[in-house]
Amino acid sequence: MADQTLTFYRTNAEQYAANKGTPNPRLFSFLDRCKPNGKVLELGTGGGVDAAAIIGRGFDLDATDGSPELAAIAASRIGRPVRTMLFNELEAVGLYDAVYACASLTHTPRSELADVIGSIRRAMTDQGIAWASFKAGGVEGSDALDRYYSYLSPDELITIWAAAGPWQSLEADVWVGGAYDRKPTTWVAITASK
Ligand SMILES: C[S@@+](CC[C@H](N)C(=O)[O-])C[C@H]1O[C@@H](n2cnc3c(N)ncnc32)[C@H](O)[C@@H]1O
Image 1: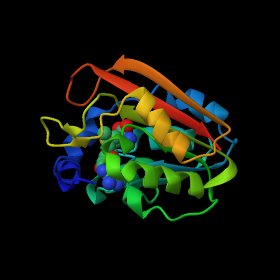
Image 2 (image 1 turned 90 degrees about the vertical axis):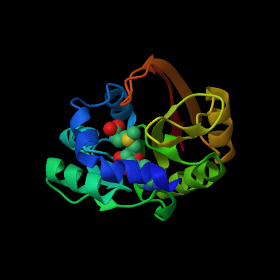
Image 3 (image 1 turned 60 degrees about the horizontal axis):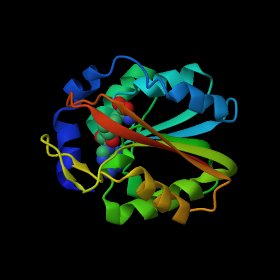
Protein backbone atom coordinates (compact mmCIF):
# COMPACT_ATOMS: atom_id res chain seq x y z
CA MET A 1 0.00 0.00 0.00
CA ALA A 2 1.41 3.33 -1.02
CA ASP A 3 1.74 5.51 2.08
CA GLN A 4 0.33 8.60 0.38
CA THR A 5 -3.05 6.91 0.01
CA LEU A 6 -3.54 6.45 3.72
CA THR A 7 -2.05 9.87 4.35
CA PHE A 8 -4.87 11.31 2.23
CA TYR A 9 -7.57 9.44 4.19
CA ARG A 10 -5.96 10.28 7.53
CA THR A 11 -5.52 13.96 6.74
CA ASN A 12 -8.91 14.47 5.08
CA ALA A 13 -10.97 12.07 7.21
CA GLU A 14 -13.73 14.48 8.23
CA GLN A 15 -14.17 15.95 4.77
CA TYR A 16 -14.11 12.50 3.18
CA ALA A 17 -16.62 11.05 5.62
CA ALA A 18 -18.99 13.99 5.14
CA ASN A 19 -19.11 13.32 1.40
CA LYS A 20 -21.08 10.05 1.51
CA GLY A 21 -24.68 10.57 2.54
CA THR A 22 -26.38 7.34 1.51
CA PRO A 23 -25.32 3.69 1.36
CA ASN A 24 -23.97 2.03 -1.75
CA PRO A 25 -27.14 0.97 -3.63
CA ARG A 26 -25.46 -2.31 -4.61
CA LEU A 27 -24.94 -3.20 -0.95
CA PHE A 28 -28.47 -4.46 -0.47
CA SER A 29 -28.53 -7.07 -3.24
CA PHE A 30 -25.25 -8.35 -1.81
CA LEU A 31 -26.69 -8.56 1.71
CA ASP A 32 -29.64 -10.51 0.29
CA ARG A 33 -27.13 -13.20 -0.69
CA CYS A 34 -25.40 -13.30 2.69
CA LYS A 35 -26.26 -15.66 5.54
CA PRO A 36 -29.04 -13.89 7.48
CA ASN A 37 -27.71 -12.31 10.68
CA GLY A 38 -24.28 -13.67 9.76
CA LYS A 39 -20.88 -12.27 10.67
CA VAL A 40 -19.66 -9.70 8.14
CA LEU A 41 -16.17 -8.21 7.83
CA GLU A 42 -15.98 -4.76 6.24
CA LEU A 43 -12.62 -3.68 4.85
CA GLY A 44 -12.15 0.09 4.49
CA THR A 45 -15.40 1.25 6.07
CA GLY A 46 -14.58 4.95 5.62
CA GLY A 47 -17.13 7.07 7.45
CA GLY A 48 -19.29 4.03 8.22
CA VAL A 49 -22.39 4.77 6.13
CA ASP A 50 -22.50 1.27 4.64
CA ALA A 51 -21.57 -0.16 8.04
CA ALA A 52 -24.68 1.41 9.58
CA ALA A 53 -26.83 -0.11 6.83
CA ILE A 54 -25.26 -3.55 7.32
CA ILE A 55 -25.98 -3.41 11.05
CA GLY A 56 -29.47 -2.11 10.30
CA ARG A 57 -30.11 -5.28 8.30
CA GLY A 58 -29.32 -7.38 11.38
CA PHE A 59 -25.79 -8.53 10.57
CA ASP A 60 -23.00 -8.93 13.12
CA LEU A 61 -20.51 -6.46 11.63
CA ASP A 62 -16.76 -6.25 12.20
CA ALA A 63 -15.99 -2.89 10.60
CA THR A 64 -12.35 -2.00 9.92
CA ASP A 65 -10.31 0.76 8.27
CA GLY A 66 -6.62 1.54 7.88
CA SER A 67 -7.18 5.17 8.90
CA PRO A 68 -7.65 5.54 12.66
CA GLU A 69 -9.32 8.90 12.03
CA LEU A 70 -11.95 7.38 9.72
CA ALA A 71 -12.35 4.40 12.08
CA ALA A 72 -13.17 6.87 14.88
CA ILE A 73 -15.74 8.69 12.73
CA ALA A 74 -17.33 5.39 11.70
CA ALA A 75 -17.36 4.18 15.32
CA SER A 76 -19.16 7.31 16.36
CA ARG A 77 -21.71 6.81 13.56
CA ILE A 78 -22.47 3.15 14.33
CA GLY A 79 -22.09 3.38 18.10
CA ARG A 80 -19.64 0.52 18.41
CA PRO A 81 -15.89 0.02 17.99
CA VAL A 82 -14.32 0.05 14.54
CA ARG A 83 -10.93 -1.61 14.36
CA THR A 84 -7.96 0.08 12.73
CA MET A 85 -6.59 -2.62 10.45
CA LEU A 86 -4.68 -2.63 7.18
CA PHE A 87 -5.82 -4.99 4.43
CA ASN A 88 -2.56 -6.92 4.68
CA GLU A 89 -3.05 -7.44 8.42
CA LEU A 90 -6.08 -9.73 7.99
CA GLU A 91 -5.25 -13.02 9.69
CA ALA A 92 -8.67 -14.49 10.55
CA VAL A 93 -9.41 -18.05 9.46
CA GLY A 94 -12.93 -19.33 8.75
CA LEU A 95 -14.51 -16.57 10.79
CA TYR A 96 -16.76 -14.51 8.49
CA ASP A 97 -19.90 -15.39 6.56
CA ALA A 98 -19.29 -12.41 4.30
CA VAL A 99 -16.63 -9.84 3.44
CA TYR A 100 -17.57 -6.42 2.06
CA ALA A 101 -15.10 -3.90 0.61
CA CYS A 102 -16.62 -0.90 -1.17
CA ALA A 103 -14.05 1.13 -3.14
CA SER A 104 -11.29 0.19 -0.72
CA LEU A 105 -9.27 -2.75 -2.09
CA THR A 106 -8.92 -0.68 -5.26
CA HIS A 107 -6.07 1.03 -3.36
CA THR A 108 -4.13 -2.22 -2.91
CA PRO A 109 -1.04 -2.35 -5.13
CA ARG A 110 -1.27 -4.84 -7.99
CA SER A 111 1.71 -6.70 -6.55
CA GLU A 112 -0.12 -7.27 -3.21
CA LEU A 113 -3.68 -7.87 -4.36
CA ALA A 114 -3.44 -11.65 -4.83
CA ASP A 115 -2.21 -12.09 -1.25
CA VAL A 116 -4.96 -9.87 0.15
CA ILE A 117 -7.66 -11.76 -1.78
CA GLY A 118 -6.16 -15.03 -0.52
CA SER A 119 -6.43 -13.77 3.05
CA ILE A 120 -10.06 -12.74 2.44
CA ARG A 121 -10.91 -16.22 1.17
CA ARG A 122 -9.14 -17.78 4.15
CA ALA A 123 -11.04 -15.51 6.55
CA MET A 124 -14.41 -16.74 5.27
CA THR A 125 -16.49 -19.75 6.28
CA ASP A 126 -17.00 -22.49 3.69
CA GLN A 127 -20.20 -20.91 2.35
CA GLY A 128 -18.83 -17.39 2.63
CA ILE A 129 -19.38 -14.66 0.05
CA ALA A 130 -17.29 -11.58 -0.73
CA TRP A 131 -18.09 -8.32 -2.57
CA ALA A 132 -15.43 -5.78 -3.52
CA SER A 133 -15.55 -2.82 -5.89
CA PHE A 134 -12.64 -1.38 -7.86
CA LYS A 135 -11.99 1.58 -10.15
CA ALA A 136 -11.32 0.06 -13.57
CA GLY A 137 -8.58 1.04 -15.97
CA GLY A 138 -5.49 -0.20 -17.70
CA VAL A 139 -2.42 1.18 -15.94
CA GLU A 140 -1.84 1.48 -12.21
CA GLY A 141 -1.17 4.94 -10.87
CA SER A 142 -2.17 7.77 -8.57
CA ASP A 143 -5.00 10.27 -8.95
CA ALA A 144 -4.90 14.05 -8.51
CA LEU A 145 -5.42 13.56 -4.76
CA ASP A 146 -2.28 11.37 -4.60
CA ARG A 147 -4.24 8.16 -3.92
CA TYR A 148 -2.85 4.98 -5.52
CA TYR A 149 -5.26 2.88 -7.63
CA SER A 150 -4.55 -0.51 -9.23
CA TYR A 151 -6.83 0.45 -12.17
CA LEU A 152 -7.26 -3.15 -13.35
CA SER A 153 -9.62 -4.22 -16.13
CA PRO A 154 -12.63 -6.46 -15.37
CA ASP A 155 -10.84 -9.41 -17.01
CA GLU A 156 -7.68 -8.83 -14.99
CA LEU A 157 -9.69 -8.64 -11.77
CA ILE A 158 -11.49 -11.88 -12.55
CA THR A 159 -8.16 -13.56 -13.32
CA ILE A 160 -6.59 -12.41 -10.03
CA TRP A 161 -9.64 -13.46 -7.98
CA ALA A 162 -9.87 -16.81 -9.78
CA ALA A 163 -6.23 -17.55 -8.94
CA ALA A 164 -7.04 -17.12 -5.23
CA GLY A 165 -9.87 -19.71 -5.51
CA PRO A 166 -11.40 -22.16 -5.86
CA TRP A 167 -14.74 -20.32 -5.79
CA GLN A 168 -18.25 -21.70 -6.32
CA SER A 169 -18.94 -18.65 -8.44
CA LEU A 170 -17.13 -15.49 -9.48
CA GLU A 171 -19.02 -12.56 -11.03
CA ALA A 172 -18.02 -9.13 -12.32
CA ASP A 173 -20.52 -6.27 -12.43
CA VAL A 174 -19.40 -3.19 -14.41
CA TRP A 175 -21.01 0.26 -14.39
CA VAL A 176 -20.15 3.94 -14.81
CA GLY A 177 -20.79 6.01 -11.71
CA GLY A 178 -19.46 8.83 -9.61
CA ALA A 179 -16.56 9.13 -7.23
CA TYR A 180 -15.22 11.42 -4.51
CA ASP A 181 -13.17 13.33 -7.10
CA ARG A 182 -16.39 13.99 -9.09
CA LYS A 183 -14.97 12.27 -12.18
CA PRO A 184 -17.12 9.79 -14.16
CA THR A 185 -15.67 6.45 -13.14
CA THR A 186 -15.94 2.93 -14.48
CA TRP A 187 -16.41 0.60 -11.52
CA VAL A 188 -16.07 -3.17 -11.34
CA ALA A 189 -17.55 -5.14 -8.46
CA ILE A 190 -16.41 -8.70 -7.92
CA THR A 191 -18.73 -11.07 -6.08
CA ALA A 192 -17.01 -14.30 -5.06
CA SER A 193 -18.81 -17.24 -3.44
CA LYS A 194 -16.60 -19.70 -1.61
C1 LIG B 1 -12.54 5.24 -1.26
S1 LIG B 1 -12.58 5.00 0.47
C2 LIG B 1 -14.07 4.02 0.65
C3 LIG B 1 -14.68 4.12 2.01
C4 LIG B 1 -16.03 3.42 2.16
N1 LIG B 1 -15.95 2.01 1.92
C5 LIG B 1 -17.05 4.06 1.25
O1 LIG B 1 -17.54 3.40 0.35
O2 LIG B 1 -17.33 5.25 1.45
C6 LIG B 1 -11.28 3.86 0.78
C7 LIG B 1 -11.13 3.46 2.23
O3 LIG B 1 -10.09 2.48 2.35
C8 LIG B 1 -9.26 2.80 3.43
N2 LIG B 1 -7.93 2.27 3.15
C9 LIG B 1 -7.08 2.70 2.20
N3 LIG B 1 -5.97 1.96 2.23
C10 LIG B 1 -6.13 1.02 3.20
C11 LIG B 1 -5.33 -0.06 3.70
N4 LIG B 1 -4.13 -0.33 3.19
N5 LIG B 1 -5.83 -0.83 4.68
C12 LIG B 1 -7.06 -0.56 5.20
N6 LIG B 1 -7.85 0.45 4.78
C13 LIG B 1 -7.39 1.23 3.79
C14 LIG B 1 -9.29 4.30 3.53
O4 LIG B 1 -8.93 4.77 4.80
C15 LIG B 1 -10.74 4.59 3.15
O5 LIG B 1 -11.58 4.58 4.27
